[in-house]
Image 1 (tube, rainbow, N blue to C red):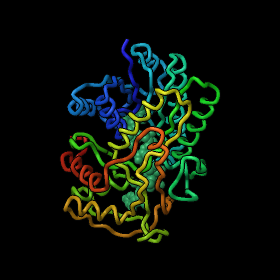
Image 2: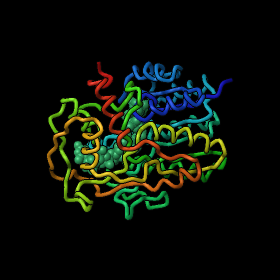
Image 3: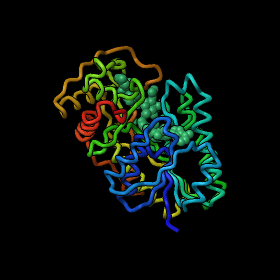
Image 4: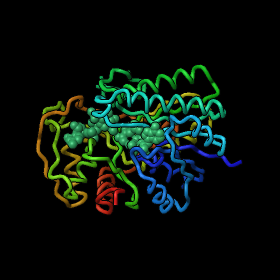
Length: 340
Ligand code: NAD
Ligand code: UD1
């Protein structure tokens, strides 16, 4: 029987890019997704890019019966768990939805994995677990847990669940990946980020201003303790991030038990630097207005990524010009995202 990697949330932004890297590296993939924040059309786009079609099963990860069937039908040896809700503002309004969807789906997934003796799991965590970091760059051993919204809380709680699981069962191999700020898109322009409604994150907002869908960018505060007063983040090309998952599966194949890695670039970029980089890379104007801070935002957040390089040989290779060009290439060719 063939071995498969199960990718939950595999039609989403990071998941779809990761599935391509997995297929390119010879893995066979089963995607499960309930399409609450993505489209089935993504599977066709993946096939077009990778020249191989992943298996796709539409289901909610909380549907234990259906998930069990997938594990019975395919020999799943590893799981990459992207499925989850990720809008911070929405999580404040609907905390139960976030606890139920994000934590509930992980509990069911782990239960079904246990029943089928699947031992390897990669979990999509976030730099958000560090809260307001005491120092930058942030190292993996820095404190986690002092967070201010239910979305971040779900990531912290799932991390603790996985750490306990690793302690209790030494045969499990668990990777917690803390992503910094993914931007960019596949170079083909066939897949990319397609947020519902008005984007919360900065890059899709910028590309929607560039395409004329939104009039200008609201810059949330210029009184932070940073070089130009605007917030500093670690923006990582989504294809680099996707490749990080392939490196992680290879790492898990060596039976390391629990591992935790920051996936970022190690470079901090301010909002104004990002806007100017986008303008310079693409020759389009991005009008903006400086406005009040967004509640919950922090000054500066960027990673130290030495551990991922030392232990997995992975590091980000794309630069800010690549990120800006690829984000714009995706938006330009898909002005309405996947919605056309
Ligand atoms: P996304 O919304 O594009 O992808 C998530 C996918 O999961 C979507 O396709 C959605 O339909 C699916 N999904 C959600 N709940 C589900 C459920 N119960 N059952 C089945 N499918 C379900 O988001 P993304 O940006 O690709 O993020 C992927 C993961 O990475 C998420 O867990 C997110 O919290 C995490 N993460 C994202 C970022 C970011 O900036 N994009 C940063 C850090 C961490
Ligand atoms: C946000 C989430 C975080 C999540 C991360 C990746 C909040 C408070 N935090 O982080 O939990 O892990 O996305 O999904 O939502 N900005 C603007 N104008 C905009 C949008 C953003 O100026 O329209 C600024 C922000 O103030 C920040 C930077 O751009 O300084 C990046 O913002 P964003 O893309 O939302 O990411 P984070 O705030 O890092």
